[in-house]
Length: 323
Length: 288
Image 1 (cartoon, rainbow over the protein chains, first blue to last red):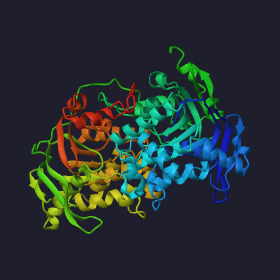
Image 2: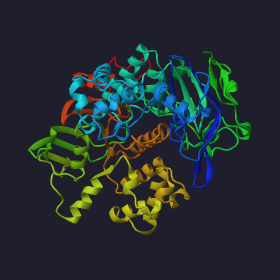
Image 3: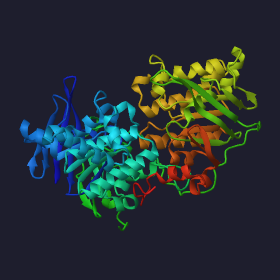
Image 4: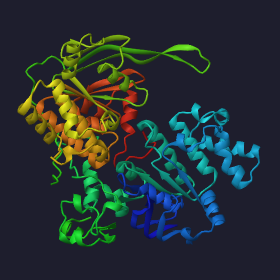
């Protein structure tokens, strides 16, 4: 359904082109939920902006972005508008920043119905109430008349999901949708998103810094580092059979809730961005397995033990391991 | 050099027990009311913290857990004197600190008892000051050390939080979030306090950096026997750093006890929901 091939993106930073994505490859199947996990500067949010062509002015994009076989990068303005209005829906991290505070919830949720679908005002209100009920908001009639400041963060994020569903998209891009929420509210909102996308057979790209959350919500997980994907594996397998040294490091970095570990397997150094990476593997400066070959050339994302891994030494390191 | 994964252990880490074994912090009946007005101008009283009691033993480590509106931040602010309690008592190392300090000497003594590290140290660092100068400033005010002794202690502190010579000459804007948090920790330790309050101190950090800081905090406690009061919404971080835990909801304590016991077999319904909301392998959203 969605295919990114060798995507390079560079932004214009004070007159100089600064790479943010390099050689990015991604595939999303119909009805699949794909997690996109990474730290600061890994390029996960830039990936969303590239798919929706919402990059800042002066950005340079090369490679291919295909949605159901259509070339997104070549879309003319009218086609692009239709793509954004009805094919994809984006759930942003901070609903308070994304929702116009001067509009009532009903106007916000029903906007897609009235503007894009030409539905009457009364019909839009009826369908909006249904959508609010679908995302678990009680007393929908009253909520539709309220303003954003009258709703809690969790309620507002549900309203944003309702507004996205109103356009009946086939692909949802959720960009850190629960990062600003309390833990118990996060569990509720993620539960709603998970149920609705299964019921409606929607595809979803779920962007998060929380690897455990991605493993719980998604079918497959892609781990990003310095503007490209370093490992892709099914969520079921990734926790126990991660193969890229960075993924293994990320898993070891999080303390467990079930028990206390004596020490965390901290990765030394700090996450680098695409523009700071040298000609070799982007992870080389932090990797315990790095050799000269790793500094010389960039590894490709290749099939390994049921997943995809971007590492020169993955076979040597995991020679004796069995999936 | 990266360290390889160590085997998980259920054995508690045992830092040296300080000679003075008065509780690091003892809080009893702590209450804070705020006067608020609604949009119609009607006045009412909002109780942010209500009858909260807990003890951090000398050299111990307690986690204060809660979500938005739980009162955990207001509690921290009262502990460091940024808010005055409406009722209740706060003691650090046996000294009452429920009311504002009345003399400079008392303020200095309180600073040596208890220091705090906030979530975002960027706003509390002077942009024109190098790392070295920022830490030395606190040593000058609180350590009583002079000359080579102070320089020696400064080098020791910078080394303890992982700054080399070159990095110690950097200014805040040249530092990453994790490095700034290391400066904040070094500054807090420079006052040689017996208790460190960590107010969401690792929450805003990238996962791989958070792990480095958590390891650092474990090392510091093992080496010095300093007590921690960790304020956090992250149960896994609390379990990693703390011996005991207090769960707050809407300003009240709903459950407290040994950290492992509370998280493994929560007795209170809210603690159960909180625990079940943490995604773990095999977790299904909405099943909590």
